[in-house]
Amino acid sequence: MKNILILILIPFSMFCQVDVPDEYWLDDSNFEETISGDTAFGDDNQETIVIEFWAKFNEANCFSDWSLIEDALYYRVNIANAPVAKKKHRVRMAPTIIIFKAGVKEFQWKAGLDLELPTNIEEIQEAINEINNANRF
Image 1 (cartoon, rainbow, N blue to C red):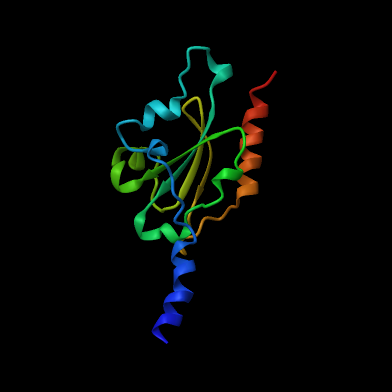
Image 2: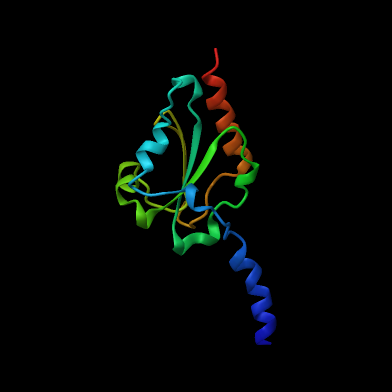
């Protein structure tokens, strides 16, 4: 019986434990520089940045489909390692997703009291497309 329970729980515990490479994790030391998107070529080349504020206690509700995102860079922030960014952007729940362009907050979604994010990958992609199209003349 114990083995059956373990086999049932393993997929649920691994559901959202997406391996995010180290270079996509931000903390207070590199957060502002990353979201500002400063480039040597001016504003037209600045990337749209998607930030997921993440917490270990709620990793079951993190996003796992980031490979489906197009035309934006994705980063994850452990709120325990970025108290300044967390406070500045008023992140009170994890996950919280914020989309930035040139350091400006364009869209934000916050988890509710149920700790689930009230959005999906399609809605996030629509927001990215809207931001990117607004910057074209």
